[in-house]
Image 1 (cartoon, rainbow, N blue to C red):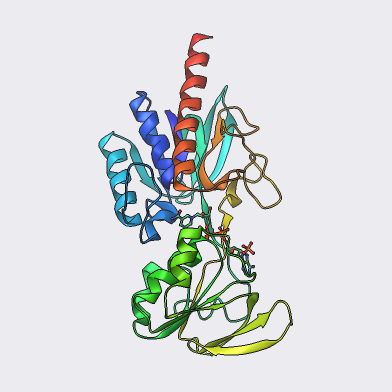
Image 2 (image 1 turned 90 degrees about the vertical axis):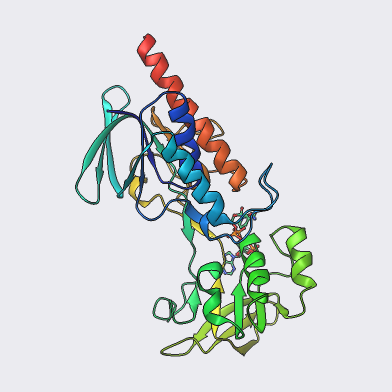
Amino acid sequence: MYDIIIVGAGTAGLTAAIYGRRAGKSVAIYESETYGGQIINTPEIENYPGIKNVSGYKFATDLYEQVISLGTDFIFDKIMKIEGSFEEGFKVTTELGKTNEAKTIILACGAKNRHLGLPMEERLLGRGISYCATCDGAFFKHRTVAVNGGGNTALEDAIYLSNLCEKVYLVHRRDAFRGEQALVDIVKSTSNIELVLNSTVSALKGEKKLEGITVKDTVTSGERDISVDALFVAIGQVPSNEQFTDLVNTDQAGYIIAGEDCKTNIKGIFAAGDGRTKSLRQLTTAAADGAVSAVGCCDLILHSNQA
Ligand code: NAP
């Protein structure tokens, strides 16, 4: 039986593994895709304390290697079910039908990209529709593209693509951006980024590949078509907690309800990172949750040993 099983190898999960292992606990971390979570697709991180500038890929890879060097068991499989209790121990069952046991659990499943929900969106995925500018931007070198969204991801994507593409339309549903002012300033001073504000993407054009988008003005309701070769959708995330909504309490949007102590309503199960209810979802807060949740597991185990 592991002391701690962590579900998800994003920044929160990997940080929890560091704290768990350094406290001398046996730790397994499960990941169904690749390590790193969302940050692996971020071109540049410039707001992590002590690191002036680093790519998301390097940050995630260094973190992963740190976790492996500390002796964490890294298991590429998806946990589908968690049963049991702190008193009796938890049993996890994976997509591959394997089982494992742990004294405590940290749910650090993060979040995935929100889709527009438009007709043709799924069909045109990989044919002009993308949710990752750093992954797919190079396919559209010297072409015209659009980015949809007004948060940090959309702003960073627009800046990144402006260095590759001839023209970038940035479509946002309001006239003020949610993202950082420093990024807004760069976007506004970049000559090949054109802002399309107070607008939503209302239709996708093209059958075999994306040929254009229709944008709807949220003030006048007027629509117009813009010819683009790609649309990078960056309209936020939805939590990846589907497997655990019957296990722990979640809010209406599916985020696991937990405070700054990362404790869920179930003793021995913690929630860390972007998948829990919180006001600020950043690399720093994900890392903080990883530390807090792992120390929470260690405290519980210590007190149960003393009892
Ligand atoms: P976000 O901050 O939630 O922003 C999502 C954007 O999409 C918002 O501007 C929102 O508009 C818009 N939006 C949401 N649903 C929409 C819909 N159905 N149709 C059209 N527009 C829609 O998401 P994010 O930019 O992916 O960032 C997620 C978190 O990661 C944030 O905390 C962000 O700060 C963080 N992050 C940080 C960095 C960094 O620090 N370097 C980089 C990337 C992300 P409204 O503004 O009108 O709500």
